[in-house]
Length: 210
Image (cartoon, rainbow, N blue to C red; front, side):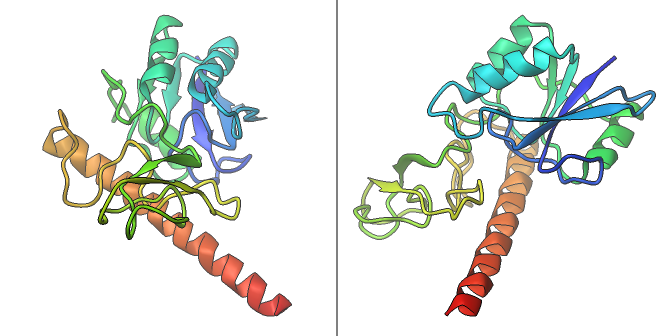
């Protein structure tokens, strides 16, 4: 059996990437032998269809399960059609996920848990400020109006403070129960932590150059 894990790096100590379609790497691994290969995801910067193409990629690699943070509707449908089961809400390292998978802690997800454009660098935001100018990412947060904004994520892969498909803090997504909301909030916290780390790293780089 093979499982595919969305990863930020190329080895088992890498952190799980919360995005499916636009994760930097897929770790394809046999959980029994822990023999694996790391595949660079060619769809990270795709203008559209990243979820579908990534789903086809892991299905063609013979994966029977996908472990990831979140999975949108297009990817979920493609994976399901290929007979690949999806487990979302994953955090921590790839190795930790494999151990928990082998212990039988997970159940396959029955439906996509984020919107179709989760993880993209551009999108309609809830206008931070007046919803008019450039936001730090996709113009997230509630402001005075809705507006579109261009991402400035410095290549971090986490372009907005709150990714499309995940509601702002304190707002329960429609059709999501409390357990699912808790998982979404944990994923959001991981995204925010990573973004803050990347921003601080960039600040230090700019200070050295200045």
